[in-house]
Image (tube, rainbow, N blue to C red; front, side, top):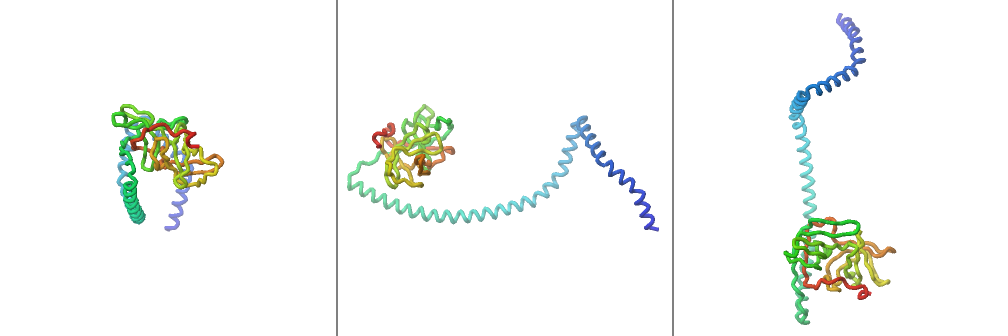
Amino acid sequence: MKPRTSGSVIRLTAPLRALAQRFSFLLLLLASVALMMAGKIDALWVDSFRARVTDAFVPILDAISRPAATAAHLVESVVQVENAFEENQRLKAENARLLQWKQAALRLEAENISLRGLLHATPEPPVSFITARVIAAPGSSFLRALVVTAGRRDGVRKGQAAIADAGLIGRVVEVGEWSSRILLLTDINARIPVSLESSRIRAVMAGDNSDLTRLLYLPQDAPVSVGERVVTSGHGGVFPPGLAVGVVAAVGEKGIRVQPNVDLSRIEHIRLVDFGLPGGESESVSELK
């Protein structure tokens, strides 16, 4: 009897199930339209209902997210520990190298003092500097400059060197009472007497409003290689010798290009250094030939 009853129930419900499947899409569409109409009629009620539904699901979502957040935190902690270990090893090696350089610097300083005493060399003028913050970079296709928060009242004067951590970036060309303008190395009007650190060959580094600078007035057979350091030559009375400027980035038919040591687009603070020099204009071309 039971199998016959089950078969009868299935035969009776089959038309109803087929009817429900046929009109399910239409029913869902009508329900959606009804919900939209209800939202238009009583937006406050819909918002309140949606808020209640959200509140009801928040504890569930929070409970689900906690294990995932905990696992992510554990993974991040492991990665940080591994990175800290690698960083510690790197810093130890770097510290050992710096200690070697420190000993070499102390030895050279003592030797320098001794030789200056024997030669009765004239002591270099004292160096003073002012730290300023960059507040504007009025750069364009025709100008590469910075505006800093230090001016005449702070002791800034025209011609002072502008230096960042990695080296020279330009010089002061305009001084106001509260601010100053720095002409960058890459500006088309910038001309700086430089020399190649290894060969001591003199040249003029010129900007052209691009990210790289050019070396001009080099001898035709000058041995220049990529990666060679470029420093100020000290000629012309603008900058002292030996200030790091950049490295040779390219040598080719288009000339010798120099990559500045400092990313000039990311400068936030600079030092305006007074080396006690007259701060005149750059060395003339005729003197460098």
